[in-house]
Image (cartoon, rainbow over all chains, first blue to last red; front, side):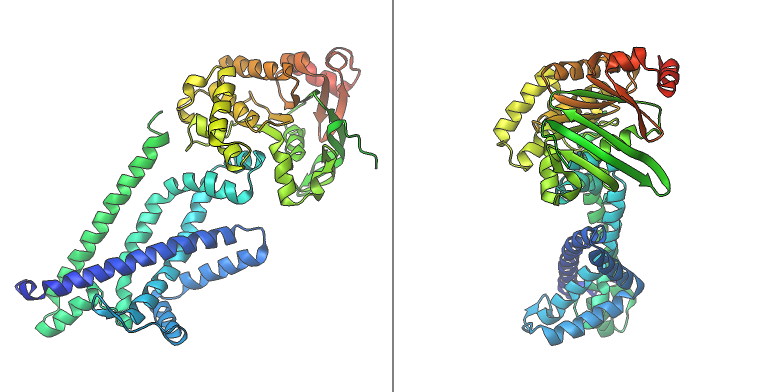
Length: 228
Length: 248
């Protein structure tokens, strides 16, 4: 049933690598964007807060597929990205695609950050402020490091979702693992085995990631809770 | 209006409401250099709220709060931060940073604000920790300490900023009874160094012993004010006497 792998395994490896690359870029952009958006959302300067809330509402309220396509079509007009091949796809598709994943993820991570910040007692902020620290220093040096520990499980969920949802980039022609599986399926006139391989690859990626996150969680917890 | 620069803190016509509920109703008092002012009174009387207005932790008030002649309500964010550095605050719940060791808790702000180098801050922290008998806990994390130890570290954390006044918001109220003494002891020694202190407390013996001036707050007013001897022994104020009769 899986004899085709002997011939097609490089295609799957390339697709898996592409999935890893776009997901990593998406996660990084998502985290950075999430930090900016949560700071704006909690800002006392109202226009920032409205902007952040609007962004979150729009991203969460529209399908990722449409966001990806819109961003791709807009960026491909606005940014002259050279047509360089990278892991079987053109960079003028990979770059807008990863940015779109990040823009999508940013809305969710911003909300996860907000839940983390709310989970930290207000006394921590007051202690920072009363020492003469600025509100931003208090947020990023006192509240955030504690919040990160509380939000790791939710962040893990978000990263796992993002890896799986990166398959939507198939629609703008990024040859990530789902696209490759469909391509192989078309050649074989049988889609089931290659799709099973793709599913297995997603499973391995997300499983490894969740183990890494578990490790991170344990390490961060040990620092100040296991001493009890 | 004339400002007495000898006053480290001056409060004039301070009013504050949470929604419709007036919690501070026209408060006036001053704290002079090296003075120890103790605020007592029933729960819900506005003591903590008043204290939190002194370093502008609670900002939505009317009236004036002055720190060394500077009206906190009229300062920019930056200027306000500079004032707060000079006003240490100790909280009922300690509020140590749980993700930082005792030493990091103490050195974090002075280093971050570039008041001293890291080496200086560490040396200073060890010095202060020795004074409260906790130097061997420098590497420990707050959660491994008892309440009394945490509060002593919290006091040290504030002192590391070399403040000109220390505000204490019921520093012993969250402690088990056997730990109250160690914290009050640290505060007493601090008082002897000439530190200016404003203390909200329910420890009446301590108040009587340490205070230069006692404010009795009830229902949002400074209902009575005077020396400890006056307030605890000679006040004719009905509410003061009723309160003291209940707690002593």
